[in-house]
Length: 130
Image (cartoon, rainbow, N blue to C red; front, side, top):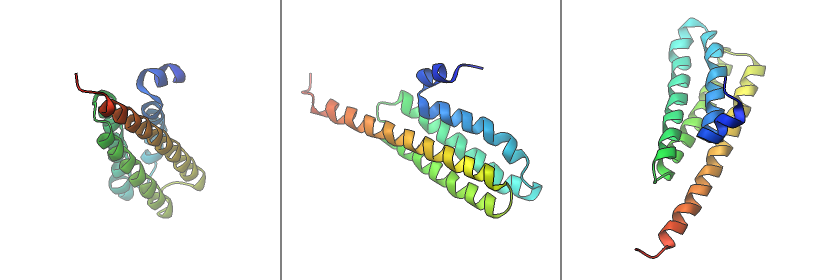
């Protein structure tokens, strides 16, 4: 596929990291026990897709704080959903720790983007009206 840094440049590191995460998570969730795949697994994937949509919105919206805040919340929900999946023995410790690390990284990227957006918006408000 596309070279990671090339994609990260085009879409931003948080979006690219979330794509990589989704790609990794799909087969992991596919192996969840059938009765939990539809409850916990689907919820994880839908939450991840929500986060992706919010990050895309933040890319195109001048008001970035709200979609970034929503994306951050979705990442936090996924942390808890993976913790639950691990407790219910849907995935092994190695995969759980990998998921937790990836989600922490994505959360940090979104946090950095939020800070950057806040600074940018504060500067824009400080400019005199045309």
